[in-house]
Length: 120
Image 1 (cartoon, rainbow, N blue to C red):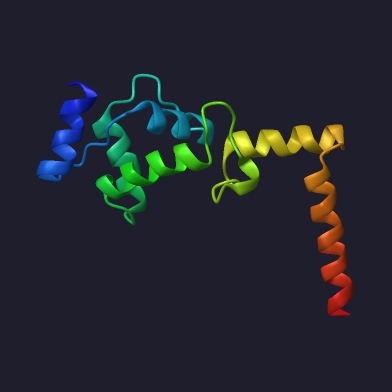
Image 2 (cartoon, one colour; image 1 turned 120 degrees about the vertical axis):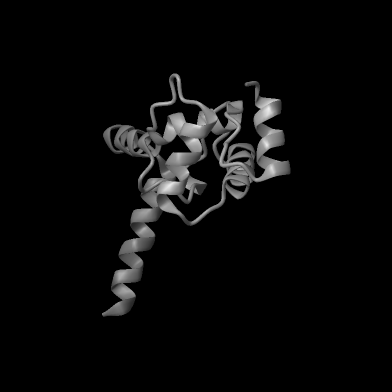
């Protein structure tokens, strides 16, 4: 079944099928979900595990997230709401800590220390 057919099933009939578009696949892969051989129905079952978001909403959120944050050219992990649990964001943080040159990380540490000093 092609992505267009899955999209029609999802939007028209409310089937629990998640179209595995490039955007959805990219976000899932970066998050750490093994997507090789995954079908749309498998992805929808994975989402239903959390039972908080309907498949159509999930598809829209995946596409929006991939267009604004998890870009094909490179993810913007510093803006990502999933960064605490995302495999790619965790790897990027480890690389940043090793290099020690990321200004945003240094600024965050300074802000955190300043906030601690204000609480006292």
